[in-house]
Image (cartoon, rainbow, N blue to C red; front, side, top):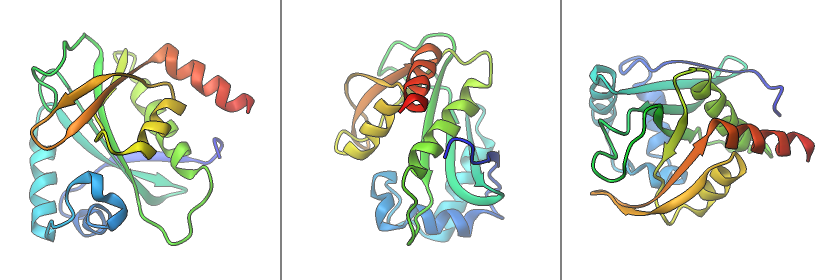
Length: 181
């Protein structure tokens, strides 16, 4: 799966709203916390992200077809302000794989690997920070598989989260192990 071509492009809040709405309101996206969102709600959310100085959203493509949503943010400015001691080079990340009726074994892991590669392609990125819901055990396992190390539980306004970090070296070491399997 690692040889599968993944690319990302900036999310267009208007052109992509219907697509993203279907993803974020799908039952499998419960931890995205937009289950009841209307199409205008999704447009507003991604217009706000598009306008934000420290938050970006992208559509991830697999062989040119939209396959995942990726968000990158500065955790010292949004999402995690005051919840941990941010370090220079920290980049926050969210990702959501598009729902499918025909799952492909290993696809989600390939997506998170592509997301990590995309974020670490920026030489200024030293460490990736995530804060998934503490109940989202599936994403905890995926995070661990690509090198994340849990730090502690934190209370965010919308959820209790597992604050986790992954340095470039941790990601490279996990990727090397993943290739060897």
